[in-house]
Length: 305
Image: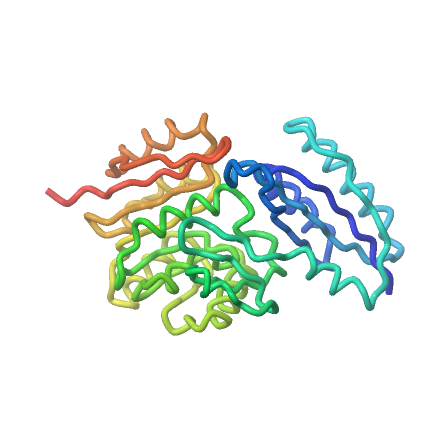
């Protein structure tokens, strides 16, 4: 079989939206590759190559039109370059797909690393997080993920119990375990995310410390009861609209009094609304981390009176 590769290079803020669009039409896989930082001014300048692979069959033209239409609508929100299309043969597409993935340093300590490449980063003093890049999200390419990982580095104390609400590929769960969490309790409403988290936890040798369940807040509370442990650091890398809903539904109950919550996926103009809603839920703002137009908000759950 032949495959049609579609790719375009965008900023980190646009990468996840483009990957989400590609994922709907590309059973052959979606890849994100962080370009080298040639600016010398930090990671905010780096761009991401997003690629997908469409089988050349009787639905190819329909899928191509849908992708082109979706990209046009996305470009109304934020300008995008024209996509590049090229055909690759069956024996070449998998290697072409893998070639887009390179190790991505994140924060002070972490390196997100494709599972099939030899991990040499320990010599550089970084903790390697092996990831299966068959999952488009949670690769470290998007600012929301990087912000959450950097906050995790600073706030995690060895032996903590960590919660991961909306775990996606499992990148935050695996990083927490690799950085010394005693136990990680992860949930996601998408069964494919549960499978990906389990797979990546096994690849990193931390499966015994990462428990994953399909579901949302109630599933996370049930995991805590089952484990006989309260979450001390809760991570939620979800869009602001969902975070507001979860706060109304009792998100603060998922972290122990005196514990901390990191919420990412919040645009700059949405931050104040999330801070106000969190305050109503008993969470005090500790800090705001920013990259491009995105924010990660860190909170402290007040001790019971």
